[in-house]
Length: 382
Length: 216
Image (cartoon, rainbow over all chains, first blue to last red; front, side, top):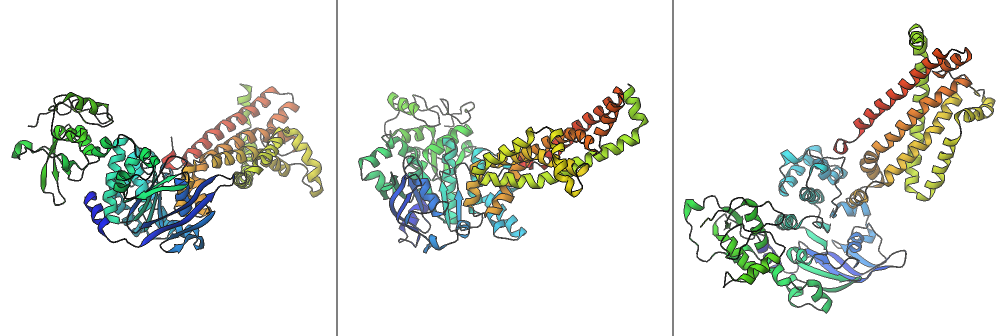
């Protein structure tokens, strides 16, 4: 649903500004100028991605907003109030903070980790317990089996979900996320990004995400602020940045293989099979995916489940169509019309994406799925 | 063999000496814990103090126990405690400083910065960070220092018999005076047994006090 929601959200007239930075400068003790006058705003309920090469000052900027670092000059306002006048501890408790290393406390269970801020805020035991349950459900980890686990018993993806749940615990209006999905493998990262968009469509936080990955920025961002050497190089919607890069640097940063990357992020609904008829019971075991699943994620799902095709359903659970390996790989390689050309599959194998392909484009689950578990005996579901 | 016979014959006496011995070690460990841990925490906050403090504690460790006990005689004599239990416990407390300070300092300094970043970022105060994150994460390592100190001090206490502090050193001392190897050996055996037992029990305690999620 996230794509639809994102578009709907963009149609809302410019909302209340929640984070306002004005000519923010930060010079470190050694004289290093990390930020040289940064000005931008984040509106209520939007995801703003702060992106740039390492050393551009993006993490510093995030840490200035929750007062982990003192400002050199300029001003930062959060929810209309200058943070210089606010108590750092109270400010931070109103902002969820997610870091790349997650930082779950190893001496506490998952439940206790999520309960940290509510406990600091003196919530009652029952209220904390209820909230932890809600949040674990929200991030897709069943409370019955995860609440009592310890961080070392979690996979990277699970830990990162708990990190997000922990940041959301006291329902802060603002979320600051520093490379939240950076340490994960590409498939898990993409899955978590999709899930995060789903969560965001429910919780509608004002989110500032730091990233160095343009794909992530395009995927998550309602708006993108590109930093370079402590200054804003360009800011705007993902479309604007992608279609109208302001400088050669932006163009270079977006990357040359953008076409392929972009197509991988297309919703799978654009890869529907044309000649498809619901053959009823014979396809009963097919995978069902939400319509907004990306091409990349749909391929990964097919590989994982050793399925040859998947049905796409809309928000009401109605089946809107069917995708297969063939239709997905065609979309991915940009070959919507002509299929079966050899250079097409060669290009695909050179890519980083999971999913099978073969020169004929008919056999599901052909080559190694690159990280996901290999498909079992291929079925020719047609 | 004669040593075992001796022990069997003087069981009551040996038991009393063992209890004396343990009382001194326990009292000293308790005092050392409440003094050395705060010092270790302090120098982990003010790193520039760490080197001089650790060097001082190291210096104390290098003073031979018999010399330290001798040194305390003139210092404590004016208050009538030149010999006996008081100087012994003071010496033990001094010796225990290094392992406990060093382990506390090391444990806190080596806590992964990601936990502090997360804790600060969530709005913990300094003391909340200490009590709910730093202390539990550092505790196992601090207890390792306590363990080292206890085992070492069980040995040091044996020397204290020379200043009339009692304990198992008394057994060894009287064996030496009477030129009776069996008694000396009996004292040494009980002492060794005590040290090994303390090591094992404190190992269990250390494991038991390690937060469940961090046990190996």
